[in-house]
Structures are given as structure tokens and as C-alpha cells.
Image (cartoon, rainbow, N blue to C red; front, side, top):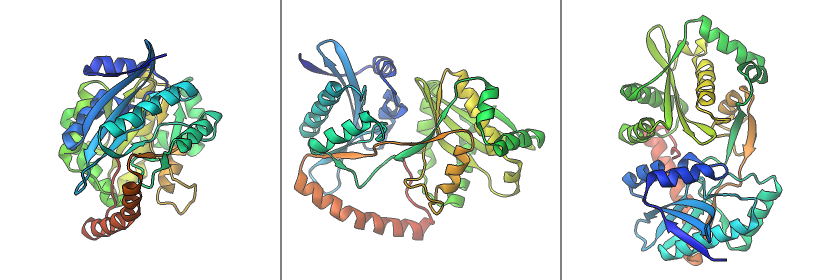
Length: 359
């Protein structure tokens, strides 16, 4: 059988085929590549076929490395294929490794949603290791998440939640918190809340122009929904929900500080986000991010507990893996990277009191 690769140039063709594959991810959509091209990346969209049989797709991002003659490559939350098919895995890895060499990469990073605690995950890890891939010392996305099954009736969904969470949803409603679907004109207000959240929780965020581009692009194409929670006429919290295929992702959340938090707007906001996801045909709600290690001292522990209260389950993925095209240079790169990142973190903390953001 002959393996073929196609470079896809049409948005509808790419997204339609992506949606037909198992577990498609929003970070593999045409739109995500479009956005990243505005921030220094070059996007290549590769479709892999065996004769006329579809194997999978990979949005490959390429970015030059400063002071080096090579680039780094990244397949965000991909590639997308049937990972339980060993033959498909081999063909896709062949294509990715060849592409990495042809594009002059120092290394190529992938971080697909593959469960390591399954026979499929064990096989994928074995094959990656056997082919020279390495666990990445620099993950970009969260390795773990909380997944919520949103099939069934609303009554069944509420019954799966912790009792305190159901109580807080009703409390928010009794205290006059309302939730409405936002528009493009609400983005500056949402960003202001996001800035407030970043200051309170000590994480670095990008400038408004970046988020406006992301949010506007996906909202205009009906692939994202902005929900705003209001109390006594003012916005007190917001959620940006992304939707593609059978899954919805809660990637961006923001809330005001102070006394208003006692009215539990975030509980009602998440409930309404779940309802919106269901109305758009989604069956899984990905709450996007959980601690690397389940430990109460982890900075994300409070956020993790909040997400789990809605009836979710903790989900591990195999994490980020690098394919080094130039092993010796890659080894030197990863040895010096922790020192560089530590120095950068100290500078950012001194200047902003924050740590780097994802995406």
C-alpha cells in the first residue's frame, strides 16, 4: 500500500475532514493555525492517506529559533488519527518525522489526547520511545484535564454534581446573578475581568490584541461562545467556550474579586456553559487543566476541586513528546533551557508578579 500526504489549502475541506476523525481537537482546526500565523508561526496542514483511505491529519506549526539556524515544530493537541490502530500510528509518525527533517526543525513536539493508562496509550508510548521520541522537558499545554460527560438529562447532570455545587447554582440564581450570551462588543469587558483574574491568581496573560483575535475569529465562525455573568447590572464573571465536533472546551475564565464572589457567579456560569455545550450537540465538556500531581499543595488544587465538583473525572494524557532531528544540539538545548526559563521566570515575577501563560 502507498502512503500519500496532501497539503490542504481550503478551510472547509480541512475542518470537515478533521471533524470526521476520532476525538478531533479545536487546536487542530484551520482557525487555530490561522491565528498562530499572526504570531510568528508558519502553519502546514498535512493529510495522510493510505491509497484513498484517510489515516489522519496534522496541523504542524513551525517557528524559527532565535540565534540558531533551525526551527522548532509543534503539532498542538495532535496529530488526529485513530491511535488504537498500530498501522495508522506508524504511518503518521513516518510522515511527521520526514516532515521534521524536510522543514529544517531542531525538533518536533506533539501532545495528543491519548490516555497512557490504556493498552492504546501503552502501545503509543512504546512506539514513540522505540522510534527515538523523548518526553518533552517543555510542555506547552496542560498534561491533565477534567472531563465532564454531559449526556443525559439536566436532572441527571445535576445529580452527578456534589451537593454543595447544586446548592451554589441555586444560591446564585436566588441572589440575582444572571448569565447571558455575550457578543464581540463584550470582549474588552471580558478581558478586563481576565486581567483582574491574572493579577489575583498570579499568571501572565498576553495583550488584549492577541485574545481579541482568538476570541473574535472563533466567535464569528460559531466555534466559540462568550458567556457573561452579571449581578446588579455589572459583569462579575465570564467564560469563553470553544466548540468543535462532540467536545466543548473551557479555556478562558475570568471573575471579579471581592465580595461579589460570595454570590457564586462562577458556579452558575459553568452550569450555563454546560447547557450551551449540550444545546450545540456536544457530549463532552473539557474543563482544560488539572494538576500534574494530585497534591493539595499544588497551586492548581483549588481550581481542580472546583472543576471536579461538577461531576467530572480526572483525565491523564501521555503529555508532550519531542522528536529530535539533531540529537546533540537538542541535548544542549534542553540542558540550557531550564536555566533560561528559571531566569525568565524570576524576571517576570519581579516585573509583574506573574508566571507564563499557556496557548
